[in-house]
Length: 568
Ligand code: SRM
Ligand code: SF4
View 1: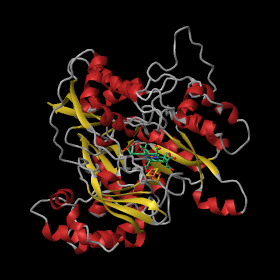
View 2: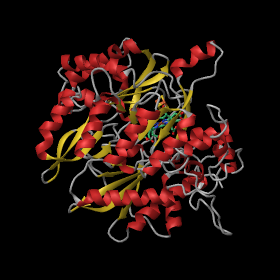
View 3: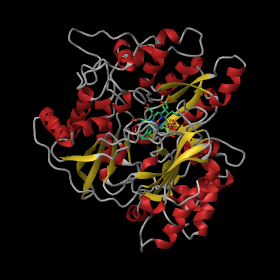
View 4: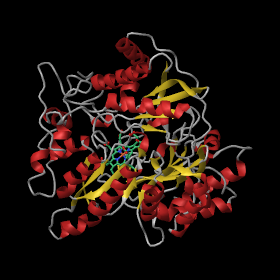
């Protein structure tokens, strides 16, 4: 049932449909002794939170030697709202040490954790161990509702609990229901369905045309780029409680460098849904939206299968009418939204009386031990001793929640002796950076990102100091390709991998996540990136109006002003 019903469906559509609700031949393949899965199972595995990858640092050497690629799996958990109990965190820490070839944990830009470098032979044990700790990986990847993200800041305001309640209810409604996960990973018995019953009441046997992302934030605090999601729920807070949500639809970052008809898009306000009457109205609205994408999304060309393209093709009015028809009622118009924060929740904050939380900057989301910084070890020790709730943010950082106020100095001391800087010891620019994983694990990376940004930052920090901009919030994001996993198209300055060692530079954006940036330069060599951006930052430092931030300055002055600037 697609609007392109007569067009040929993509290969992946057939794989999904023939997978018997995500079973494929994964169970058999786990016993076959090979280091990798078949092409079909690789696609089905994504729905189970598993990506087959190979170590790209070794690839060309192995090919030259006529050997097989070095395969391993990336496992992505689904952690709604990014919240883990201390014991759950410790399970991840142990699994990273025991089974990941890299020994690391990776916080993602959607508040969850990835384990890279899991050999096929260890896959089932690893997933089983996560499940024993009540952590699933089902739906962390694949064409269904992904991990729903929510502002991770803890606090005693009732609206935070209400947002979490709604997030969990929505997670339940949008989760895949197939029994395949239990059969494959947990040795569950095959399901017996009675006539007319289906394993996937919402998704059907073909699931969605593409991934589907939902985010929840309180109005004002856009710490997670709500406009970049297929559905954004912006909570309107009245007297400390959630009065209702403005629903945004059709956001997404992904584009393809070689195809100019692909583009990032900020979500459009669709409607307001009150929470007072029935929470179900919010859930029903979201389910109706998902079902529209299921029924009308493009199933012939995955490049245009995200809901943003459906909305642009058919128009927001059509979309609204379709939601109304499915709900059987008129939608209320969206409310006007105000934003004042785009920062992450770093540093110490009051959580409730006598209790604090600490937001720690995790360099590009990678929890690991190095010679200079024993981040993984100190986090493990703090979690073992203090038993904080561990919260991941959508800016790849961690918040340790529930720390008694009197223990603050001791926590700081422990971090210092492990070489972990407190956020206030980091430059403002560093605190506002993100980089996607890219090499060596991401199969789509064209250039380095997580491993390259650390070398790029010091010259930028010096430049900001030199220009008197050290206190300025300017967001810098880097990705290894145009797919946009670190949400680069919102950033004030973005470096987007174009080829090995070369990056497109995008400028403008908004630190509040409310505007997209524009392409300024193409395929600039890594060692010329700072010089390419320098003239724009110099002009900003000298010409900006009182209180004007970088994004507003860029939009006022315009791309034309800088066409000839830079020496890239
Ligand atoms: Fe992503 C594909 C990593 C957030 C847009 N992304 C991938 C894959 C799985 C590569 C692949 O398909 O083979 C990457 C795995 C790399 C690795 O080795 O770990 C990958 N994406 C990531 C993470 C880990 C980046 C990070 O540094 O944190 C993020 C995991 C989030 C999560 O927990 O679910 C991640 N990806 C995003 C985001 C940001 C967001 O959702 O807020 C986006 C842009 C928003 C959006 O979806 O529009 C994003 N990833 C993509 C795309 C482009 C989608 C599109 O609409 O065109 C791809 C490629 C694809 O799907 O074909 C992709
Ligand atoms: Fe890989 Fe590209 Fe995503 Fe980076 S942006 S993780 S290189 S797909």
